[in-house]
Amino acid sequence: MLLALDVGNTHVVVGLMEGREVRRSFRIATRRDNAVGDYAVALSQLLELAEVNRREVEQVIISSVVPPVFNSVQTGVRKVIGKPPMVVGPGIKTGLNIQMDTPSQVGSDRIVVAVAALAEYEPPLTLLDMGTATTIEVVGKGNTYLGGCIIPGVRISMEALTSRTAQLPGIRLDRPRQVIGKNTVDCMRSGIMFGAAAMIDGMLDRVEEVLGTERASRFHSHFSHIEFTPKGGEKCHRTFADDGGFGPDWAPLAAEIARRGWSPTFICESAGTQAEDALEMKKIYQEALAAQE
Image 1 (cartoon, one colour):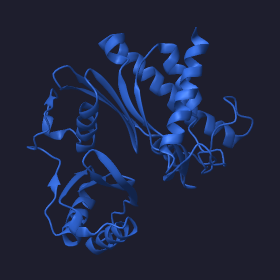
Image 2 (spheres, rainbow, N blue to C red; image 1 turned 60 degrees about the horizontal axis):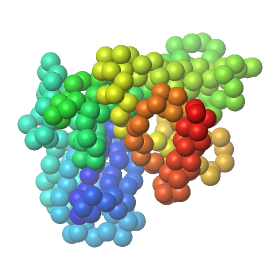
Image 3 (spheres, rainbow, N blue to C red; image 1 turned 90 degrees about the vertical axis):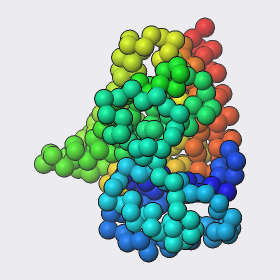
């Protein structure tokens, strides 16, 4: 069994894999003040919850974009598993031909996204990852990593808006009721959520202009409804059936993809109902395609 950890700015995502199948996945809040023991205890509890004996873990791999946290996570993993992890970083063989000015400075999160996509799909590919930052990666034929874009994520944009203004309050990132808001909170939600969607549309248009329609139309992305904390941070993944106005809404994105005539691959990351919600996503997308005829 492989234990894979992705240390991000908001969460440490933990996956247990057998072959190509993800057996279980968990999230631990990334805290810069956590000690080695904190991460070791959290990992031990997750393994117990998954009913996995630590001796079953044969290999460990870690990708991190948070240097202050990395050593604590790495040491905690070694204490629990008793094996040194492979670390994604400069010098590791990925099979990518990285055509960047300084390949060693490309974030490991961006590299593993590209490698994972190439394990499933033929290039050229455009990859969209919406985390603390929104990133777009472009991989050409011959597994050539051409580069990409790094954009402030939804949470960062909201925090900047509320912290740099005197009268705008902190808000929950619930689904906007309409584009034109009728009060301050709705105006903020509309601007943040629809603004982020329009930004992605515009960036993909620009990528398409550079690469051509055929190359830009094939991209890989993950999708789920998200519950955010009162401060705008990601709390957990939700399902399509959950009440509470959790977003983002899949239908507008499906309609935009259908309008462009693109053929991307989306991975459903709903909390425990991936198969059911993936079928619902497929149904909505097919309806959007039919509406274009």
